Amino acid sequence: MKKTFLVLLLFLQVFGFSQIINIPDINFKNKLLQADINNNIAGFIKIDLNNNGEIEQSEALNVTYLFLITSNISSLDGIEYFNNLQSLGCHYNSITNLNLSSLNQLINLRCDFNNMSSLNINGLANLQSLICSNNQIANLTFNGLNNLNTILCNNNLITTLDFSNNPSLTKLNCSNNNLASINLKNGISHDFSNVNFNDCWKTGNPNLATICVDASELASVQNHLNNCGSAQTINITSNCGLGNEEFAVNKVVLYPNPTNNFVTLHNEGAFFTTVVIYNYLGQELKRFSVIDEVVEIDLSNFNSGIYFFNLLGEKNEIVKIVKQ
Image (cartoon, rainbow, N blue to C red; front, side):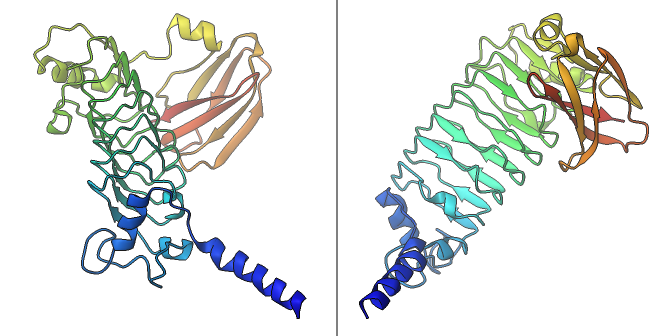
């Protein structure tokens, strides 16, 4: 009888109590418990369905929307269990660090007006809109964010922005940071002088020296900066990543980019030994060994689009090539 009781107790611990999410921030937890059909905290649904004063993993999976504005929240620890979340608004709080990399269904994120120094959104392939302005963020990366089209990151401490792997970007506000460079060269042509880019990037960025764009965007970016009314000199170029310093550091170059049929790989010192080509969806299309220092790669059988060349050897490097 005693043995049976112990087995039953273990079963309850594993399959019952372990379902409860640990949410250290009491204000965050209380906000979740307040959600019901009469308010918009979770899109007019009740989260704590069994009324036990706890949030369980199964309950978190029912939530696709959270609106947590002005709730005196300092931590969103526990948010990683809301795996079906598509829209999160946590602006006007006191959050210092936010890691959302596990929420791969997230589409819209607004986390402006916090005390945030760290924001991890890498790998959120469905993310389309990010508003993270008025924080203390110094480093912000956008790896795997193929659908990101809007970013407002003004009034932070960011020193560089790289959107070379974000072909969907159509709106950018980044004034009042510590920017030295912006890389917008991603193989997709945009009109940066239109209303979507009404933020003057060089406002509050006195050290901004270089903006790299696709060749077709040079005129619109220059026009955009001219409309800002500042005399600040900024080098607008389409040759980012192909200068002499870059050659010396990486000892590799792929050109031309964009290309129609062939790409030439310069691999000084056989720095890389293997090339793997992936398509936009991450599917491996071709793999081959590299022996010579100059290799011509035939892409004539590839459809027009964006391809990623994973160069493997002493270190790994990924280069994006646009096939026209």
